[in-house]
Length: 197
Image 1: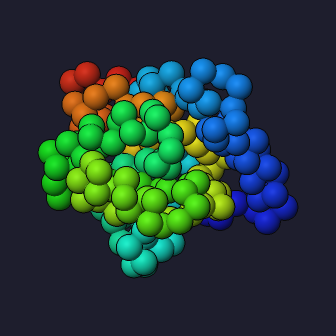
Image 2: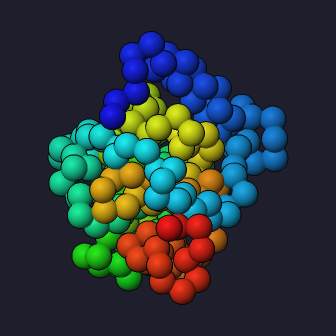
């Protein structure tokens, strides 16, 4: 379900305000707003509607989230000038490799002024997963407001229906944490998956 048009300007304004602190002019140490890096599971009853997201990748190819329905999807917001994003990039790639075909990892580049900057970041970390290029931040409007990334980096893990099943606001703790979270999203009744049912 798309965000109503009358809500979009408010979301974009809130996003711009929150993400502006990710720039070089921020006042906090490191000039970034980050989350607490905790896994926040979302119970099935609280997941809401599937996310409807499409766009163009940094490589100029079309991407539609609907093509990955039927398996979990990891959506990660980032940009190359974000220190925490650089810290977690190797872990995201490791998780992507470990997950293989059981889940899809997709980045959302929300700030780089050119696709070339984002591509250089991907080469630096040997990232093989695609990233949607959305320097205006509009791609995050696909998220239901309560799950909208308000910090960078932020990672949403979607269930097989495309609904937000877990959030990690801030740097992912480890590749293992991310892969285990994806496994809990895929099988909420598994041991150690409290809060995902």
